[in-house]
Amino acid sequence: MKDIGVRIRKLRTAARLTQTELAQRLGVSPSAVGMYERGCRHPDSCMIVKLCEVFKVSADCLLGMSTHTYEAVDVIREMSERIRRDKGILLNGVPMSEQDREKLLDAIELAAEIMMSKRKAR
Image (cartoon, rainbow, N blue to C red):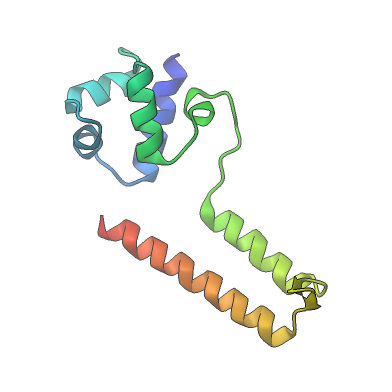
């Protein structure tokens, strides 16, 4: 169960949260977060649910039962490459034109920028 502390720390730092900020969101003390991260204390089931809600991950991911975690930038990059590469992508049953694909790529890029700016503003 010590690995959960490592995952909590990685998720916290990826979310650009301090231990104090995470503690406030969880309703615990900063020292409790530190103890979770060091493996000195283990979160109970209610705290696991709160951690999953804060980090927007599944309990399987938090507990190390699933290794399927993805960085949004990687998913966006992969999706963008596929949209550029695959000419047979349909929109309402009709192949998308090059212009439609470019509009879709622009929309995806704009959505990613909006998400990142909101995240930085937290």
